[in-house]
Structure formats: structure tokens, C-alpha cells
Image (cartoon, rainbow, N blue to C red; front, side, top):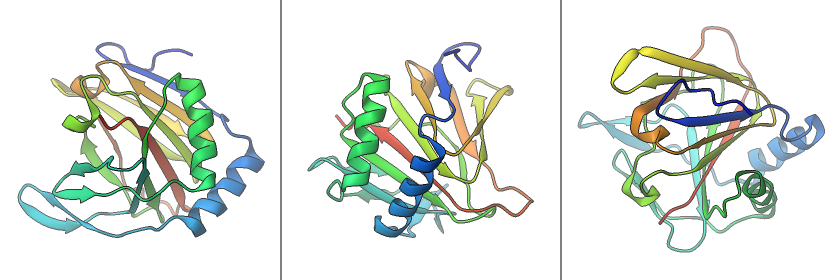
Length: 192
């Protein structure tokens, strides 16, 4: 695989990591079995509702904190364990937690951010799997906002971010103007 970033980061993309059939079945399982939440976050000192639904699953005591939220992990369920196993083999990492995001339609999004929480360690490995609608994933160099990259995250795809990526590159999934079906994204992590 080719690194998608020109410098100061390592990002690799593999479309069709899961087959169409697997992706469709996993989307249905996750849609119905995950305990989705709609929670407020703090942005620039103001509480706003996240423009998507979220859930946090993982090993005991693997708590994540971001934007004023502290999430206790729910116990692993079988579809998540199977996805984790396959993604972990591909990344050569034993992930212990996953943040799930449910983008209900074109109005749901995630703003510019870096996954640089202290619980993730110095150079975190983050494996992102997408099921459902295709969305554009954008990168912006932290020291020069004019330096940008992007990739289309397809149904069943795997995006692997590692090395110094989270130090130098912000990422986002913006709202879109055209009607878009639902999408579920899983970001596997190691909480230290």
C-alpha cells in the first residue's frame, strides 16, 4: 500500500477489506446491536450535541476522554470481536478498544481534530473501518492548513493511521449537500 500523506505521517488505505456481503451483514448487525448514544461535547467552552451517534466498546477500564466526554467501555460483542481480529491481523496490532460513529445521513459529520489524547500514547495506531455509504475523509497539515489530502472511504474499506500522523495532521468528515445513506465507522485503538 502507498502512503497517502506527503510527509510527517503514515496513512494507508485498502478498499474492499471486507467483501460486499460481509459489509452489508456487518452494517446490519452493528446498526441493530450497538448501544448508540447521542451526547453533547464541549467545543471552545460551549456544549453542543455531536452531529452523529457514538458508542465505545473495549476491554475493562479502557476509558477514553475527549471534548469533555468520558466514556466507559461496553463489553465486546461478537461482530466487533471478529472485525477487531481481522483488522488487528492486518495492522499487526492487538487493539483493546473501538470508537463507533453512526452517520445517519448527509447532515452528520465530524469536525477537524487529531486523535492525540494522552490515553493513546505517543504515536498511536488507529485502524478505521467503514460500512455503508461512501464519505470523503479529509486531512489537513497542522502547521500549514493549505496542505491537504483526502480519500473516499468506501463500504468495507480499511484506513490505517500510524507513526507521527496524529501530531501533524488533523482529519474530518464534513457534511455533504447531496442526500446520503447511513454510514457506520469503527476506529480501533489501543488505550494505554
